[in-house]
Amino acid sequence: MATDAQTGPTGPRDDRKSAALAAEKVRPRPGARVITGFAPTREALRSSPNLRQAGLDNDTANGDPQFASVFFLDGEQHKRRRTAIARFFTPKAISSRHRLVMEATTDRLLDELRSTGRGRLDQLSFELAVAVAAEIVGLGDNPTSALSRRVSAIMIGTKLPGLPRLVRPFATALAAAQVGRFFLRDVRPAIARRRAEPQEDVISHLIEEGYPDKAILMECMTYAGAGMVTTREFIVMAAWHLFDNEPLRQRFVTGAEPDQFAILEELLRLEPVASLLYRQAEEAIALSSGPVIEGELLALDVRTANLDESSVGECPLAIDPDRAEKAGVVGAFLSFGDGSHRCPGAQVALTETRVFLDRLLRVPGIRLAQAPTMKWNPALESYELRQAVVTCDRR
Ligand code: HEM
Image (cartoon, rainbow, N blue to C red):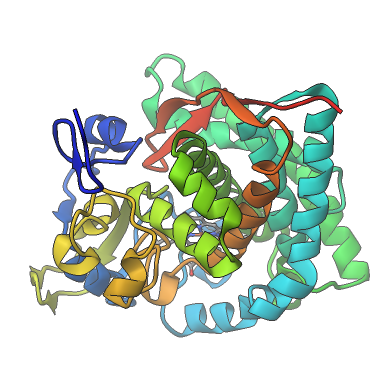
């Protein structure tokens, strides 16, 4: 059956790959009121500090909120922290420092790929994401492959909610042991080195602010989850779309950088890595979508908000890289959040994805030999793409 740009064989064109799994797996936390629609979701995200971060466990170091992770800070303290770390994420920092890491790591990974003719996309993308975030955080002293393995191991903690009750105590102990290993091998030596000689990175900044070691560990874990794991998933998802969609792939490889960014942002709009963001009301507030009572938990449905036709334009389920320009908004819509907690690493993530995919798709004979299998991470409310295999001509 003939199809056009807006219609598929069975109705409106739907280009999403993670939608069916998300529909089955996204489960708001008990008691949470779900907010949908672009404008109400964005308004809630912009209502900090009245609405406070309520995602993940707020495990502050020694229970002292003064040393909380940036993720859980709010109000003035949060503003100060974001201002202090903003220098690691400026366009200049990206083009002068981080881009060197992105390019050197990409070239090394693709060199290895070309020597064997075969590689796991999720492993390649994770090494890249770890190398880039590690440099920002100050964890880049150890070899990236070993650090990636330890970061991957600590993420077992995010699987705990989905495990059968009987194995949970064992898995909790294992997760604690992995965190201990990460601390001893990576975080503690990095702190010691930076106490002796401060660098331009997050750990040096936290030392300057008097953060105890445990709080620095918590912040490193925030960056592992927020910066390394998210980017791994997105790179594989974007690659999968580009391998599967020849016109889009052609546009990507022949396009200038702004067009490549537009394609990636549109893919992230359709396939947000974090499906739900949580906020809790400090006190009763009135939003235009209705009143929120004190203590109420809100689940902000980013996935649905990004499909709101009144804000994102027509055919919201279809890939249209020109959409954001037409709508006059930021391309990824709410996939990097909004308001004061909006992802500081957004441009870093998009740039490393662009650099990596631009070079990957030019590797002679490159093809996706095995599409990824998709699983769900209930703690991160996110898809996980594994076992994606790419092959290429051997050098
Ligand atoms: C495609 C990749 C990425 C996605 C989809 C993503 C998504 C997000 C989202 C949605 C938030 C807001 C959470 C909320 O408001 O509840 C966030 C926050 C954050 N992200 Fe990212 N992120 C990505 C990459 C990165 C990178 C590369 C870094 C750093 C190297 C990073 C560091 C952070 C930090 C530190 C926060 C907390 C900010 C705060 O609470 O003030 N992220 N991210």
